[in-house]
Length: 143
Length: 299
Image 1: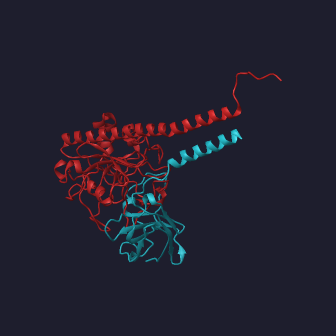
Image 2 (image 1 turned 45 degrees about the horizontal axis):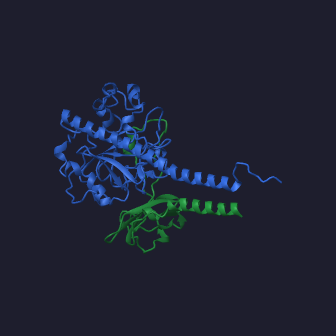
Image 3 (image 1 turned 30 degrees about the vertical axis):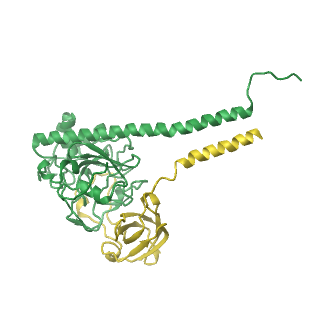
């Protein structure tokens, strides 16, 4: 019985220690997560940006991998209205990884795979609620 | 049965002692690691202080800040600052700064490899992991401030208007203290970047593209740095990257391994720590040299 009690106390202590490292302040930020579809298929890679449309918002964003993005509260958005921009670069420009890059780096450029109305001239808008939103879904298309 | 008067301890007592020791070590270990990181960060900020002083001494000598880069391949500020961080011999070894292919080797060839193939503690932040992405050539941790847009300093990047910077893509442009209209204590000079791992060329400051950072992306931004090809992009946690496009030109955010933010040298020579939670507007205002924003330095 005695050792069992000890073990349980040890468990409580360990849990306290582990948990005390968590739960930092997020400064009013909330998590944002969801999916991005390109012409009906999950967007394989890219990035998503949230630009505040009202007062008090913060610019945030994250990477899209296999159609999904997940921005945790620490780097998340503050509740409010946002303009959403989705970017995904082409992969046309290649380089020899054993050679130091030369002037070609300044002349070659990858094409953007998403139409301008989903990024630099974005028409996508979203309202982030007080507790964040983990089920967002955006449909985008190529240029 | 003899009554046991033996001097010893029971299993329970042993377990309690082990538990207590475990708890104490558990408390101590993070503290020790934090103290070590604090020491590394201090060394890192000292390096930045030295670079700030070197920039001032360079300005005293040449009446301008060092040129940041000579196009892609014919030298960056690292080679020019060498004589001012007591590496005159190394500085003399570097040839063809500001030249062309017709006049001598690029940064990664011939005699210049004797300079770029060496690690310099003065350019390395001990908190970060060292890397040599191509052959013996080294990545380092300090980059100069190119303002609030891209590495090409485009005038308007998706609505962000370029507000001048203490360093320019044009090596002939003479920028000095007179051009820092926003005030030397409100303008960044040198920032921290993280060394790309594997083939990743972030922090490859011998190369023109990677010699600088901009503030279009915030401190330790969750958004990707942009490098001209995915070949040189190796995203590790805290270092997202993607390929350059017309909409997102080549640019590198200031990043570090210090918990919660980055160090930065201001043009007055001071070094400050800026938190990840710093408003993007303030970070961009700090990086512009002549945009006249009204903002308050974080305390």
